[in-house]
Image (tube, rainbow, N blue to C red; front, top):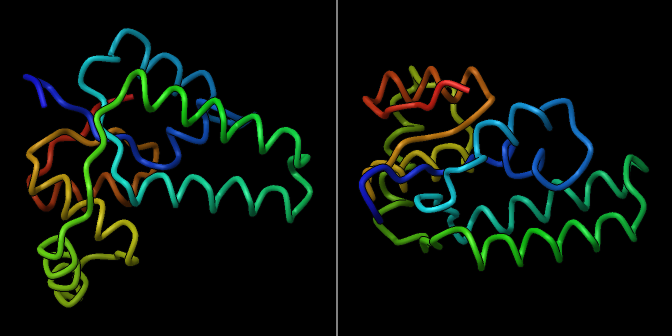
Length: 143
């Protein structure tokens, strides 16, 4: 994966491809970091879900969503490494959620399990997820 691999949370990925309050932060955080960016297969589905929800809530037009999907797919192919979800990730995510002291939903628990398995750094704008990552000893990019 390289010396410093960075796992991109959905809030960063969305802000790179559609109008969002985090557009500038995402651009600055990712600019020049293309060699070590990680996207999980789960991340692609999660990105698609967020974009589709924005169409349903009329925050995006279908044509904007289709452009975001195409641009995201092309960008991922060119600038990221793809990591698959493994059965161990599901087991670890389940264990994290059963701790009861971590405010986690399934997708974030899965992302954190993947990050721990592959040993990379998290880039997120979600303070709660960043706090849980710190609790688990996962390095978080300051963005």
